[in-house]
Image: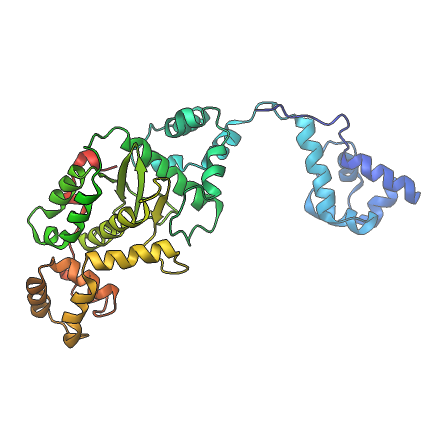
Length: 373
């Protein structure tokens, strides 16, 4: 970090006032009378014994010209230089520069990293995330990802610097976790077979555990990692050490959301990693604005995996008046979990979101602890 360079001349408000008085041919008493600032106060300001107040700045601007803001700026700059700022950045500055890229406090509350408010703790957290990729904390890695290097996610909500930075941070944490997990070599054929039978997992007792087990057998790493504030992430898919990775955030702690997100990320793996493994999909599935072609393709493939068209065709005769009994009956006939069926019907407008929610089930409690973060 470079040293702070102090100006050779530190021009005060008093210096500027004296220059203007000399130009006008006024005395200090003249200025006090014109501005209605007491002679004592004016003397203190001109001799750098008192800081300028806004009402003084307005009066000086009206009497001597310039704006109140410019007078306040001169005074503030003088006092900052006069009191002396350390050549080394302060604790606040060091924490602030990290906070722009890493929501340290939030991650501490989640138990991801050691607690502490010091700048050293903030910087050690950053190094724990980026390690050898950015040991000197230059933040250059964010510029690389921010330029879209492989970052293909549906990210229409990435509308400010914090959102994009936190998405990248979240991805990097997930990527580091993946390196600690061992699975067999990846088989796209096994994943394709699993995708064709996904609905069968939804009705099994322990189907969530079974599908995670079979994903691992196919060489796919599966993780649960909660989203960070401002990211609005539901799931992600990418490659790490020659293995595809699916990450689920449980942003909506519902089993129907889990199956839909899983189908979407499986679709990305089957469709969009055939020629290259450099892509990164970080998905907000609830935001349907400005969907990229790749996201639209994954949506369509997920609908195919979940057999959405067939389901909606079966339900069409009962649209908008599906009872609890009818919902359970249709789920049994199709061979689909009731909660997932309800989620599909609500998502596509066949059932009001306020109805039949007694069938909604939580999913977080079903995950093995070692894959949850």
